Amino acid sequence: MKQFTVKEFDPNKSYVIEASAGTGKTFNIVEMVDKLVNTYNEDLHSILIVTYTEKAAGELKSRIRGKITNADVDNAPIYTIHSFCQNTIKEFGLSANLPLNLNVIFSHSQAFKASNK
Image 1 (cartoon, rainbow, N blue to C red):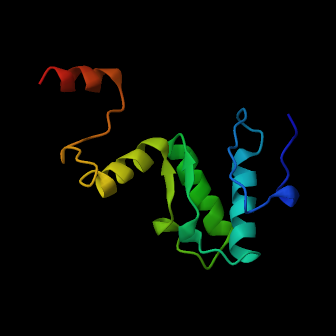
Image 2: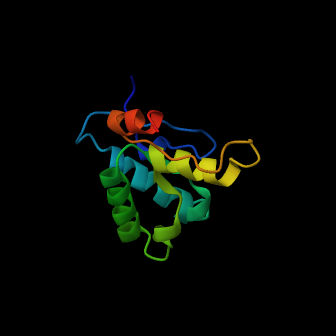
């Protein structure tokens, strides 16, 4: 697999970045966002960033805040996979005829408790 460089980044393509810890995923995502905002004049709020952990989402927000000083990072669409799904269900659940009381379950024990109610 070819190693990704921000220099080759094409804003007309979608990207999935997956790699081991400490390989520069966060750095590359921040550089891509910086390029979109400062080179292509994209609004930070039009860029969806989804990661796995709260720690990673927080680190992304912190680094983007340090790199793009004039952006409202706190309200930018930077989510964990769980919070993205929860927000999507909240926003579109009614039109999809989903129950209004859906919650994201984070563990097997929560799922077991919910199924025994």
